[in-house]
Amino acid sequence: MADKLGRYRGKRDPRRTPEPVPEHARPPGEGDTFVVQEHHAHALHWDLRLERDGVLVSWAVPKGLPPDPRTNHLAVHTEDHPMEYAAFEGEIPQGEYGGGTMTIWDRGTYVTEKWTDREVKVVLAGERVSGRYVLFHTRGRNWMIHRMDPPAAGWEPPPSPLAAMRPVTRTRLPRDQGAYAYEFAWPGRRAFAYVSGGRLTLHAGSDDITGDHRRLRALGGELGSRAVVLDGEVVPLQGDELYVCYDLVYDDGRSLLDEPWSRRRAALEALSVRGARWQTAPVWRSGPQDVRRAAREQGLPGIVAKRLDSRYEPGAESAAWVYVPG
Image (tube, rainbow, N blue to C red; front, side):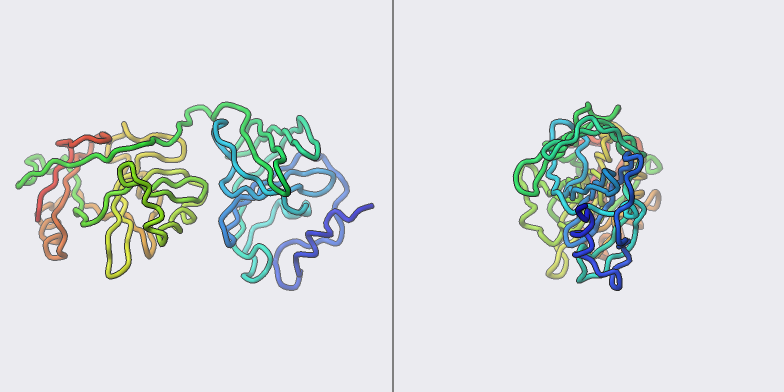
């Protein structure tokens, strides 16, 4: 009988990696376990593993399982993994095969509708993903994965193309100061950050400026599988650059354009966008004169007052946001 785990063991040294390295595959069981693992290796990807004849047949999916049947994702067929791998989470040492952090993104059971050397149809039932998917072979180790069902109830595609909401300019702060929150105005280039499948795309108006800001691409990996659209600015900073985000207009399958600013801000803060080259803009709910003074002291253009109940108005110059120069 062929050793189903020969390739797997040949790539791993059990003295150097915490991954399970059993001597033999398990006897065939129920055959209905699946797991999706988020793998922060050299390139972020997701590993889809389906139990079959005592092993986990595996594909590396660079952008994760597609939520929308209109988009197929690449799936690279890899070596069979042992059943013990379905419970594995941990840090694979750098320099070892697949070095990086492995976490379980989803798990559950599945039903096989078709399984051949070139096509696999399954119905997944997990905590985060469910529905009918087909994997079909294209060339070499490359396959594609396609969602056969409609998107999950309530799921929406990201808004695109999207024009930025702009503030009106006033010399004085709003009278009803308690109805607003206050942010610094930033001296940068306005840009939407589209993140999906761990990949970042930056758009300034209709221009794709991702290639101009390669050092910001790692933001996609920081957000993992979360699909979001952020509004913010690329700010030059002492020979480097910083992406300052101050609004969240799309979050994991849900448009937030009609949500009030206060709810969008709460969702943005929950993302915890913080790093060496990106941050969430600070905000104050009171003391606008102090905020304006601090902006002046730091050499910033001024402040922006945003109504707590304001929806996001793409492309509009809206009185719900007020820019007051320093």
